Amino acid sequence: MEARDIESRINELPEDLKKEVIDFIDFLIMKKKQGRSFGDFGFKWEGGLAEIRDQYSSVALQHQANDWR
Image (cartoon, rainbow, N blue to C red; front, side, top):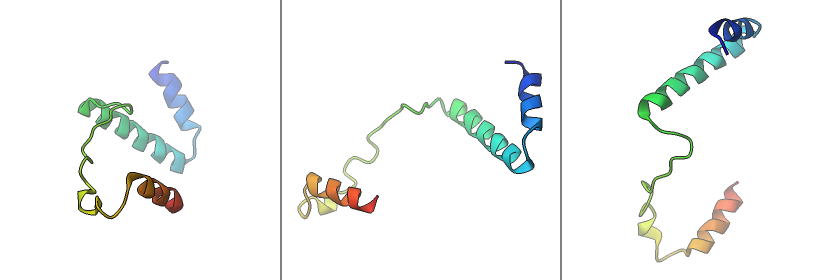
């Protein structure tokens, strides 16, 4: 797809949607600079609930998370 095709489509949008397009483009640029993809997954959260380990089982926490949804 060429830049002029993208530009002509963007020009058809109302101003509020043009802002969303710009925000999304900024997000894609940031994501590329960070070298991350949507599929990346890490364990940065590991141990985050250690203080309640003795109070709740993992199954109980799963049920509670479903209730919050």
